[in-house]
Length: 511
Image (tube, rainbow, N blue to C red; front, side, top):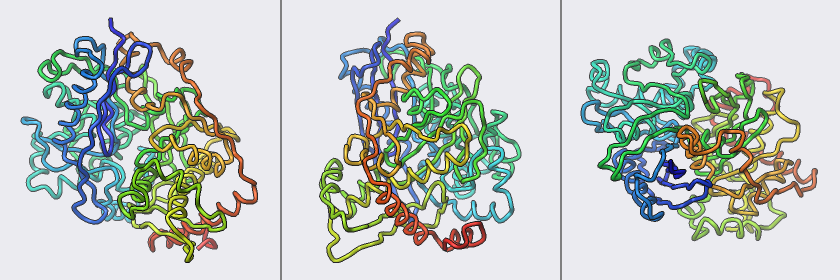
C-alpha cells in the first residue's frame, strides 16, 4: 500500500491540503484563503460553501502539484479550526446560516445569563470548559433561536450540527457519515470528557436536540470514504483532530509533561497530563488531548485569541508594515527605553482572564513612539500571554516540570526575533522543529498510522527533529520589570464586569 497520506488543514483564514510521502516529507500542497465576515461588532462568520469549495480546490491542487492521483493516496486526515460550528439541512447538506467562528462573541449575553443562574460550575465539572462565547454549544443554541424555523426543524430531525470537521466529513462522504472525533467534541460545551459522551443535562440547558449531533469517534478511526467524483477515486478518511490537538500530535507530545504552543491567528498552548484529568484552579481549560484505541489522554490548555492576528492588524489595520514577515525586523529597531504594551483584546481576552467584554488597548505611548515600538509591542504581547498560561499551568498540575521546554509551531515561529523574545519572557527554552507543518503532520499521522502505512506513536516520536533551540538571554531584573508592566496593562484593560470579579476575589488589591 502507498505511504502517501493527504492532510486537509481547514484553518481560520485559509484552507490547506498537504500530501505527505512515505517518509513524512511534503510531496505537494495547495492553499486558498477565504473571506472573513463581520456582520456586527464582535461577530465573525465564514461561508461554509466557500470553505467546502476551498477544500476541494486545495486537495486537487496538492495532488496535481505532487503529480499523483487520488488512487495513490492511502488515507486522508482532517484537522480543523475548532469551535467554529455549522448547522445544515440533513436532506440537502445546505447550511442554514453562515458558520459562526470560534472568535465570535455574540453569545456573551447567554453565557452571562447562565453564569448568573449558577451553572458555570456544572459546565466546567463536566466539560472542563468555562462559560464563554468561544465554545460551540452556545453558538448552536443561538442559531436554533435566531434562524427562522430552525428549532422546530431540529426537533423534527431535519437538521444536523457540527464543527467544521463534521460538515466536511458529511460532504466528502456524500451524506453517509455524520461523525466527529473526541477532541472536537470536547470543545462544544456539551460533551462530558470524563464519560466520553454527549451530556443530556447540558444539552437540555442549551435546548440542543441530541439527534443533531455527530457520532464521536477516536482520533484515528474510520470516518468513511470520499465520493469518487470529488477527486477521481475514493479515499478513506482515517484521522480527525482539532487543529491544536493535531499540532500536539505532530509535535510528538505523547508523554505527560510535554508542552506545545501553536502561534497562528491565535495562540494555543497544550500541556499533556496523561490520564490525569486536571481540574484547573487558574481558569485554564481541561480538554482531551487525543483519544487513541479507546484510551483518552487529557491536557491543560491555555487559549489566546490574538497572536498572529496582531501582526495582521499591524499590516492591514494601522499599515505600519507591508508584509507580516517584516514585523520582527521592525521590532528589533524599537527604542529599548520605551515600554509600550499592547493588550490585544480585539475580541476579548482568553485564558486566564476569560473576559469577553474587554477590548484592545495600548499603554506607554510617548511622543517618540513609532512603528517600531508598535511592532515590538504586538510581538511581545504574544510572549506575555504565553507566560501567563505557563505560570497557570505550573500552579495547576503537580506533574508540570519546574522548567518546561516549549515546542512551538505556526506561522509566527519563523521569526527568530519573536522566538528569542518568547524564550526571554518565559525564562524557558523554546524548541523550533525542522518540520513546521505540525498541525497537518499530526492529522496525517493519525490517518497514516490507522492505515498501517506510517509508524506507531513511539517510532513516530523518534522522527521529531530540532531545527533551533532559543534559550533565555534577558536579565532577570529586566524580565521582572517588563512582566510587571504587562500585568498592570492587562488590569487596566479588563472590562467592568471582570474588574468586579477581581474585586470580589483574592486579588482585590490589584485593581
